[in-house]
Image (cartoon, rainbow, N blue to C red):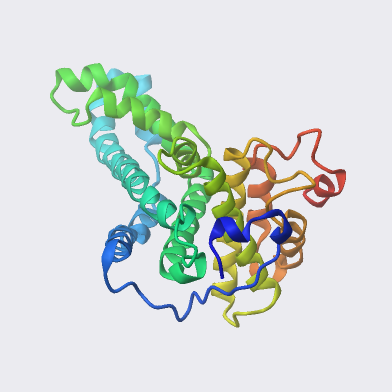
Length: 309
């Protein structure tokens, strides 16, 4: 099978000769791979909890407006605001836990030394990375349609001196500053992961680009060939593919839309377009259109740009 890097030699660009069985894979049984698997799987047990917190986040706009209009209502606003901000802190801290475990997945999947090791031999870890990608896209989708988060946190930060004086603030200023930066981005989880991958130490950037490109290509290939009957599994693959494309486009100097792209980008876009009614992939097309970096580069072929208009 060869390693990710071996597969990614020029003569193998876009050619996929293997299958990742995301439905019937073997979990690791020993060694460092098992430790990584257990760490990431344990963390992702909380993904639905985080998504539900975000989905149910209603905001504190009403009490904030009252507090702005009259200082007499500040205490009332804080009673509502502080529990909400604690939920924002919980989600932010979860993002930091993701930042801690993500390199554990990238290392084994993208920094292969032994020629016998390949992506297909680490399907369990590849599945977890795709799980992580799916969560990140889902989280960011929900965050983008919730304007209350930034409004609430902005008011909280303005109120911090008063909250400190009344001994009601439980969030240190340095954490509040980092939370503010995190939630300032429309897609905070993807931005966090992008910066993490860019700054990844110990794994050459070219290896990460090759590994993620190959993951995107194999996910596309499995959907194109109808390897899975399950709609959910096909959607899972397309979401993982899209996340990998976005990441590669941000960390690669040239991006993914050029003619010699490491990813079969044209077929990826066409598949997302063709599967809109079946798999509801319109949001994934929008993610490629609005959250990638190099789409509007001069080097991007007009055919690619037209596919995303």
